[in-house]
Length: 375
Image (cartoon, rainbow, N blue to C red; front, top):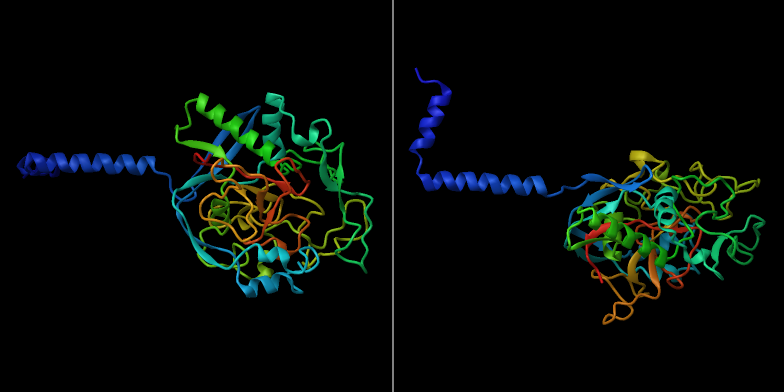
């Protein structure tokens, strides 16, 4: 009686040779493509040196909606959203535009978290890089620890932030000890692009980076798509519209005493503490703080810069420049809100234009992506 192996051998020898070749070739091609093509949520670690790593997560191509509905804009400046005073009564919300279908046509990799102090230090100290705030005459916007809130004049001067000439990413004047796993702040658009150029050069020299790819800031469309975590609707946050679901997910203005003070942010709208008076460490909230793509801190934390020039009429599907011919950006886009913000200012659709490419702020940071080269 023939065993199973003998039967298999006889079967293949009876098959036409061409058919066998086709099957083998198909298996080889399919296997190679499957092995080489990343899938949603796949991650990889980059070695930045000095025992510092950076985790990147793969984001597949897909569709999403950019913008916000009239109902969402109204909610943002209402009692629950709380953005009435901090955004000039709805002017900021007008920048978001109406919900419109967009597509990210090519997959890309994105940092699991915002770039941390330790990751930026590996770059700056390793290369001797000097940020815009550290240069002669440089300055950065930081929290004024002598500020006293005026509860009867909310949203009007004096404000808790002011320009400081002796502060930088090394000391952003948070009023609490800065940790290596805090998101780096007080860095400009120029500084962020320098970090990306350094990493691109480093990885290319090591033979780990294909010629058509680069490390860079995400385009605004890539950021907005990644923020929603795979959702195709225009929900307020990446988990939906329910603010009660925000607890334990993000770092924004909650019931937390200011450093060395006995009062909280005057705009605090959450009835719970997020655990931090100022900024939280990256990925502090773990799985609950990660969206459908596995990205942490996409709402709140620190504002994140995009590659595009800011268009007050709304974001674009393709990268937007001030001068399309020369690919110039003079007023970058930032997204996502920050630790000081109320819920209405930390939604997926929120977007702002930054003063210029040298401006920096202790509420602003960045997250990088690996994608096709953008001029």
